Amino acid sequence: MSIYLRWPLLAVMLPLLSACQPADGEKPTEEKPAEQLSIEKIDKTMLAPACDDAEDCSKISLAYLSFPESPELSAELEQDLFSMLEGIGTGGSEAEPRDLDQLAASFFASAQEARQANPDIPPYDASLKAEVVSDHNDLLVVELNGYVFTGGAHGMPLTEYFVVDRRTQQRVGLDDMLIEGQREAFDAAVADAHQRWLKEIEQNAEFAQQWPLVETDNVAPMAEDAVIKFNAYDIAPYALGQPELHLPYAALEGIFAERYLP
Image 1 (cartoon, rainbow, N blue to C red):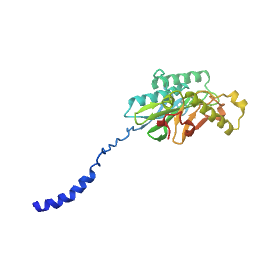
Image 2 (cartoon, rainbow, N blue to C red):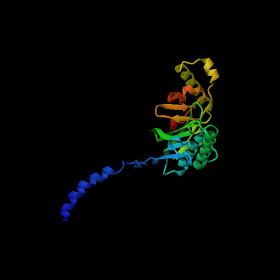
Image 3 (cartoon, rainbow, N blue to C red):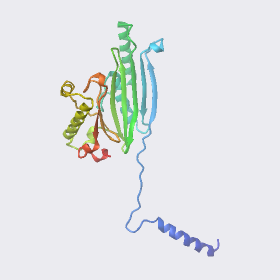
């Protein structure tokens, strides 16, 4: 290239290069992407062993999630979900690990025992599901749902929230959401929400005395408000299902850490 052509080219490039430089006293910003946490769906059906008629077999249906980048999170979700086969939820507690095959074997053994005693009862049936119900502000809320029928008039529904901070790929619970020392204030906000709920369902003090509010850590920071979900018989009869209390974020200022406020 001729030297006479190089100078016009440099004249054009220099302003462009200077425009890319930060102004004096400024440091170039570095954007860091939020941690990625991919989700895979798992579907599985388990039938009672040595059962000839599939339509009349005791059955466990599973539709849940795993996190390929975090085997620890996946294992914790599985433990909480699978424990619902026993009609309980761990609520994030440090319960003994439960192996699905062992739980299923116990479930099917109980079903066989029950039908030997009474051949007319329907087969046992369990449905365990985990699904994303909210994903905002790098907070992933997974709802774990179980419905277990072991005879009687109806099955037993169970629900537990599984909240994950995408930035840290860690599960978070109510203790993480609360500012230290604010549990009492949080319980007071829950009591207010409970009173609003009683008015919504048109129930009086006699109902509240018969079905008093109980303490729970089953809380999810949704996009619009914080939701507390109770299981059947916790604070109301079975006919009212699984009650939900909604706490507006305005009522949680100074109680919830800023990370969990919109």
